[in-house]
Length: 315
Image 1 (cartoon, rainbow, N blue to C red):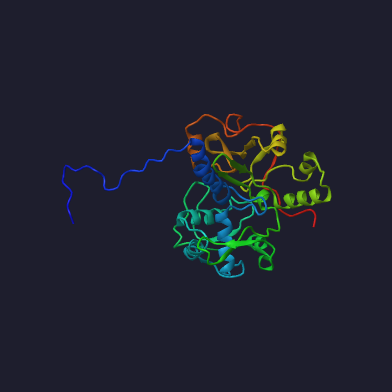
Image 2 (cartoon, rainbow, N blue to C red):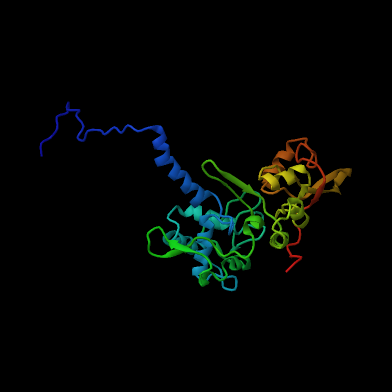
């Protein structure tokens, strides 16, 4: 083969410069990417309240027979099956989603029963998936009940070898109960969790009266219900959030005062606001003169108890 001279800078293959209108580039490249991120990654479906990775994890556990009445299985096995069959992405994203569904301080109705270290409210990370074990909870089994009876549609997986469900049958409004948060391209969502019993009552009320007003629904489901408890303000912003989809929730910790040594008074925090890192909050409070109950720390207003009982009032 004839060698090229050192001073011969002519490229082996001429560069191909494609001239294209920016509008066509956005339409042909950005729009399909945006659609994929919106539909297949970052946002949940209304029907079952799950993102694709969460749905694939639960379906994988269903296929493995990893139900609540069976022994726990290694998370590495669950993640491996999910990756090989349904979710051709990194194992970290799958395990993080699985661990999140097993955290009682995140989920109002947990869908995964974890065995081992799945992190803490202080911001500690879960142990590696080779150490932890998991199985479905009874709520997750209800989400998948009767899936084999053609209750939902199926489509081929990424390599067209097996089928996976478009969504889960979901016998309770999981999107309201567990909420969701995600950032897509041009769209984002941040839905707070709600009480299971109140959410079911609200759905029944909507079925009984399709023209029910927001005030009527709020009489049944007065507001979000966070797994970490706390006190939530009942004000116009909450009503606006339900009516328009935009709003700001005002949540503060629940505290009480105890007598300490040398006549000092101790502020004891019993319940913390949702998704607040307790350890970071404690470190900030130690270096700040702001009281845990002051308006600058948490907005004040008429409050009522979060963390209510999940028993439906109606069948």
